[in-house]
Amino acid sequence: MKGFRFTKYSPNQDPNKTTFENLLDIFLQLVTMTGGDVSEALSWLTNLDNRYGMTNPSYGIGDFIDELKEKGYLTEDNQKGEIKITGKSEQQIRKSALEEIFGKLKRGKGGQHRSTHTGLGDDRGTDRRPFEFGDSLEQIALTDSLRNAQVNHGFSGDFLLTEDDLEVTENEFKTQTSTVLMIDISHSMILYGEDRITPAKKVAMALAELIKTRYPKDTLDIIVFGNDAWQIDIKDLPYLQVGPYHTNTVAGLQLAMDLLRRRKNPNKQIFMITDGKPTCLKVGIKYYKNSFGIDSKILNETLKLAAQCRKLKVPVTTFMIASDPYLKEFVQEFTKVNNGNAYYSSLKGLGHLIFEDYRRNRTKRF
Image (cartoon, rainbow, N blue to C red):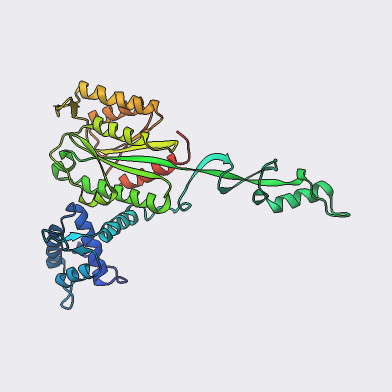
């Protein structure tokens, strides 16, 4: 037996796509990784082409750049003369993220979430019940009602259908939900040679595109938090970068609760993507910081907000993309106080977990 023989493997490009389309997929990935820096992304793409030969003598990277401009993916129309991506590129990046993360999952009903409550809703269910005064004609289950009439009155003589024979199909309420997604942009998100911010951005873009296209009545607010917390627009996600920050979880939760108070939907929730413990707290105009272990002062303020969220019936789902034992202890205590959920996820499984939790929370009332 000779054993295993290994050879170099070079994945084939999609034969159904043009050279431009194949390069576009890679370019959009690189733009996401570089935080929207087009020049750096094109530099990386050129290096990849030199190494793997993605272009050919009749179509080079220069042709690809020209076509990006012609098709509206890039623009130089700004005061500094810099090359930047356009809104078309931003939307394409979100669509690519949606396909990459949620593309293999089963599709649900377009645009709405089912709940467990029945009544005067707008979606036909499968449950049947006797007709009651006030039910609309559209709800009547004709086949079942005719069968009841034949069973109750027989086939002889004139056909008789009474109110007692009628059955109706229950309509199901469809819920709306307001979600705040908190993304940790502290320095630890790129420490130890692991890029954690890019997968977090992709998940955020995929969730945003999912809600915009399939659940348009829902709302999604995105917050980033480091030493402070601030809200960003969906279109800003590709440009998101990690800073030299500590982790002020309290500031993120405070802003998330402020945003949710303005929403009129009965269902509200917070998703928090982080890789570490809270290490920062703002006291007046100064920052109280401690990166060495779990500081009791910072922890107590964080748990107070967890309790407030629970009182307001706002569950917090924490996606911890790290597995240190003392971090698990913090997450477990935080989750217990809030009565929310917690997942210890690898970067690879992050998107699937967020989708499943988002979908599950749509079928219940908080």
